[in-house]
Picture (cartoon, rainbow over the protein chains, first blue to last red):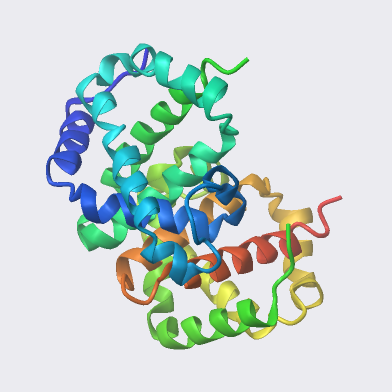
Length: 147
Length: 144
């Protein structure tokens, strides 16, 4: 089981309490699709993804970014049991969405960079460490049920 | 992985031109961050008594590394040739596991995002990420 210090817990809940999902979600997902273009393979039905500008202004991508970001809420509320919390979601990502789990880390890295831009110098090394630890547990849990 | 297009190089040079005055700050913060976020990287600095993020050795080394990055921007048309001696240093003397190049690259990108949130657009991000990956490849050239 993952051990969380009190400081780590409060860092994570604080970040998500003040998170602007409507701003960060679209930015994180569109950045992922631009920086790692092969991830576009999962968005065939999402309309125009021809260039960075199109991706950044695509409303379907924006909506999906918000949805994915809210997907993290359950992990924030169940930090002591993220693995079990995401078992079903993991099966879905494997069986229904067929997403290569290596891609979860790519989105996680983009989310880190977008949050860093938003928080500026408040995104200290300790906060980055806690946030990345949280994301790596989530990424791990989402890949757990693949077979 | 892909090689750098003319556009990638132009974007990297342009962005670097705008931020190079703060290059040392970027280096210091990136390396300090790295030893906190990725504690395993401290194993390469066991010869320093103080490996904390505020240690003068760590911060100075961040500047050294970033000067290497600055140098690489100037040699962007031939990273392998231009970084030959640095590659030999990393291969035979330092023997840093190449997985760590990715780790430090990520920390550099995070710091750039913090310090230049408006300039570090997704377009700049992808070009600079590609550049750092090419740099890492050139550094690992002499490993085996």
